[in-house]
Image (cartoon, rainbow, N blue to C red; front, top):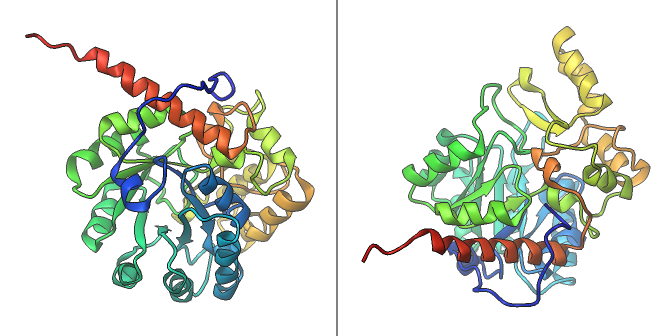
Length: 343
């Protein structure tokens, strides 16, 4: 799935979609927002590789810190990049208005909004020339996002590491993608256990305009986390069964790597139901310490999609993006052979 597909030197027809045209990126590939990972270094590396890098807004402790991070990213790349703002007051209480204002005043290319509704911010972002992507876990959310006027709806299937799901939001990418493509008029992006060119080819062939990856970009050379995390993701022992859903009982279901901390949270959900007991295990500061200090994948709760079962290496962002794009191009070109004229 990873290193098994060798990048070749010949050129195939480029991938052009509504997303690449509107945003100005080379490839219809997006790096998802990742808490304590989406710093300037990560976003710049992805954007320099021809995809869209994303700074995670609420990883920055204040709106002004986000402004500094955006400017730091601009010093590392002259390519478009975006900012993710995740609206989850229970887990990530913040002055969301102030973070959005920074995105607007800095005229970032794209704002990816997840968790809450984008409606309040659509006019403000559009007036600043910012392209709006809304990550939607259900058709209800997707329809509301379209009605609000976003530029792209990013469908997030049950397999993804997205946070903030209702307990019964268990619809896989294959179904929700198909339904979205049939029911919505706004262009569709796909997020949900995505890691390969084969998946990108399926998305584009179905009528989608791009693919978002989080866990796959976490296992890259440039990802600003300790090597132990990347090694665990790429390990043969980590497969599609290596994740679990926590916080379902609080209507805030989040897919995370299945480790001892996740198991502790699940046990407390069964026996206690008191979020004040669970919070110290789920707190972002604990994840931050794991990613940047201990490097032990068992030390904290951390978001991880089922795409972990498709990852077996830790490449550079450039090699990864080119590999995915080339495989998708080849498959799409080869698929033409399935359509045979009867004339």
